[in-house]
Amino acid sequence: SLTPASFILNGIPGLEEVHLWISFPLFTMYSIALTGNFGLMYLIYSEEVLHKPMYIFLALLSFTDVLMCTSTLPNTLCILWLNLKEIDFKTCLAQMFFVHTFTGMESGVLMLMAGMLTFLRGVILVIPFTFLTKRLPYCRGNVIPHTYCDHMSVAKISCGNVQINAIYGLMVALLIGGFDILCITVSYTMILRAVVSLSSADARQKAFSTCTAHISAIVITYVPAFFTFFTHRFGRHTIPPHIHIIMANLYLLMPPTMNPIVYGVKTKQIRETVIRFLFKGK
Image (cartoon, rainbow, N blue to C red; front, side, top):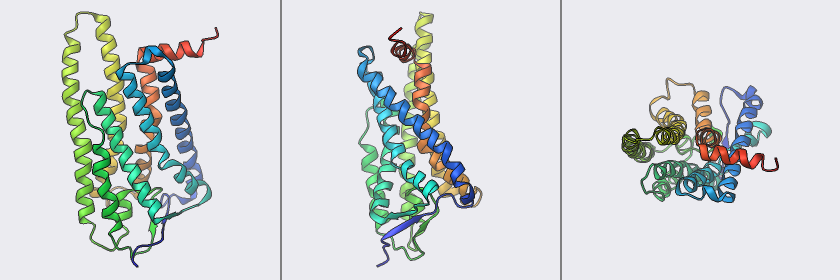
């Protein structure tokens, strides 16, 4: 059989000697992501003043963020700390499915927050990744130069034709990311035009603050994601592998880490609720 029983995730090639040091900022970001997102979800659940559509979507974004970073980071830390590199073939396919599903859902939630309705699209588009990867023959060994099972990282160690995988992966990236960015841009253009026309300066400032928080979250999500998607296809010979792998980890970790901070600082109602919650006794 040309299907291996397991793969070896090789971590970050070229930086093996500093794996331990790389793990500390990743662990810190993961801890902040879990604390911030669980805290935000609890705050929205417990405070009745936050039971509004915008904050419900924000809680959904936090829930997706937790699932997204948890699908890879515990496994990555096991590689960097304990050198536990082996992963079962089916587990690898499952991880690949969840990684791409949750990133697609993250994009979908951001688009929902901008006013459009789509969610299950991410799951539907990612399902073929699993089957396209499972059909490939693996006769070049089972070592994956990565910290988790990314679709193209697994496909590239196959000795079969991965052109379909590459084309479909690029198509999904453009359909999810490109389409969402287009819809978000159109939505926010309309929103900003409406905000500018507001007569009240206080209302304009409040609306701009909310928009700034959302735009910051969009930039944090899409910039590292598109860098990862396109370097897989077009930057293999110009960008060192360790840079690509570090960015691939950051694109799953940056949004969960930064979103609670950005929304907590920029959204006045959340900021005031946090302060009131922290100093409730006083």
